[in-house]
Length: 337
Image (tube, rainbow, N blue to C red):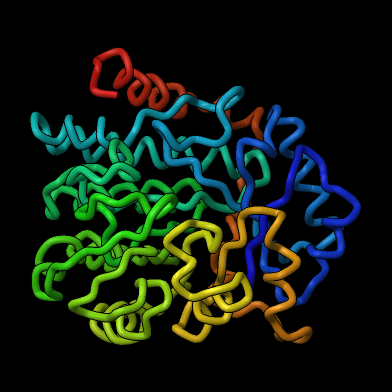
């Protein structure tokens, strides 16, 4: 199935039939789709009115450099700020990870959004695309904080999506711009990058997003196109039973599979349950690559629908939120963000 992007603050007429296509599972929103919370709520209502209540609505609301909705939402510090606290006080960092996740999740749920693609559990080892988005370079610390973040999201009524499997933090290339090659052996990747994913899977995470990185010692294809990574390692070795999601098919490293339609089919053939077509310019071609009748949404994707959330008024009247917001936003003032 597909998760698609739309162009603006309101749905265009030509986008409305996309939402009715049986192969479309939902919409991924970006900063281009956001002006205010009121506008966001209206857009979410419009998406579901046209496409059906089953449609998922998602966003990247990680904090730090990747936070699509800003005005009207808590300005979240990057995950690296929490990792920095861990080096001084592990218990405090774990609490902050849970609180950061709860604030993020509860605010989005009160605005009609089902889930954020979070947390990032890549290792902070110098990759330009990851940077401050990752908790830490140490796999044990990244795993412990990732588990705490998943707990906080669940408490906020939101499913969690780990990214970018099997680990994007240890290569230099930014897959948005170039192909990224990680020459390490599977044993090295197991020892380091896979550890946070394995620990968060134990925390019952609902979904995993694949990296567009290629690991030639394991498979010649990027991980999102690889049956080895998806079926043998993620599902077989790690025992993951939730939804597997591609990264955006418009990224430079995704063109290894060919045309837009070939990318969609390659992801699905490898074992992805959901393929991201984030830019409206590619949606028509992506839709054309799939059969008209794709059946009902699988349970693994339906599990990404958010729990019944609070209203914004009840959320802002919650003293717990005030405490959490004060604690996590203090990380900006402390200079760790």
